[in-house]
Image (tube, rainbow, N blue to C red; front, top):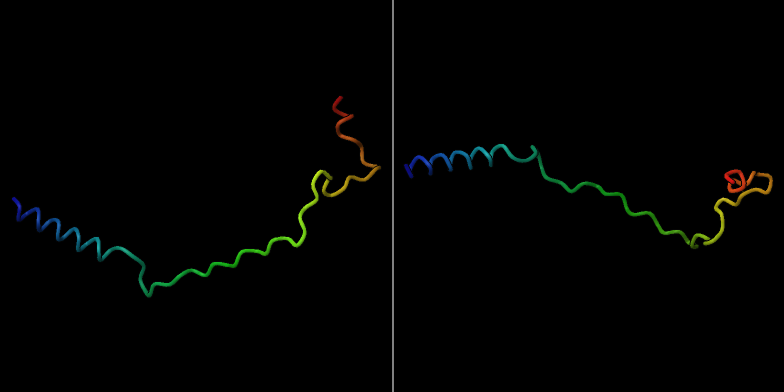
Length: 63
């Protein structure tokens, strides 16, 4: 019984080692560098892009 288990384990280990992986040489993928951070911070408390004075105010239309 133990001999059968050892053979089965050996055969399954051999099959798993033969069947795993990619053919050909291994390589690291080319990862693009991270973009540079902006030179100046984004303004806070202002609309971006600024709203033109001729545009209707959306808050007054809701009321």
